[in-house]
Image 1 (tube, helix red, strand yellow):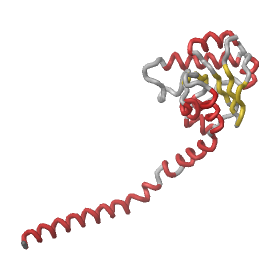
Image 2 (cartoon, one colour; image 1 turned 90 degrees about the vertical axis):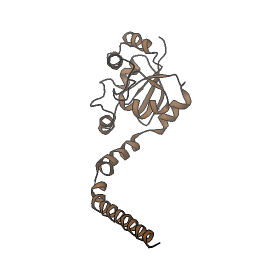
Image 3 (tube, helix red, strand yellow; image 1 turned 120 degrees about the vertical axis):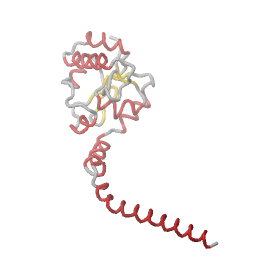
Length: 186
């Protein structure tokens, strides 16, 4: 019986040592854990991004567009709005894009569509839009730089809302600085 008690006592001592060492490890490294970017600047950026997202836009898309709708949009709208609403996009940030499609071609075509809108060339736009069956254009003239950076973008395309309207598109939704235009055959 005494032999078993000795084994039990040693096991308890080892277990206690493990608990103490684990506690020391936590005490030593907890301050550096709390100082990580995830609890500081990155968290602040995430909170700012959340404040800049419009639930109204997301809800409108969910209620008023088909699940098969394809949107022409910038990376920030792709990541934060369109895909979150369960809709499709022409192209998005390459790191979030489907690896089985030609991202370079799709991104080039997306940029060409934005360029056609900037030039107010509806015919050039329609040629590429039909290739991807684009249903809607979503646009904001002003996007906080933090939103663009977090989406992997540096700059917005040079197109403006008035260019899209001048290309023959009427907004079907406008709120919170966001405009959505329905793409219809001309």
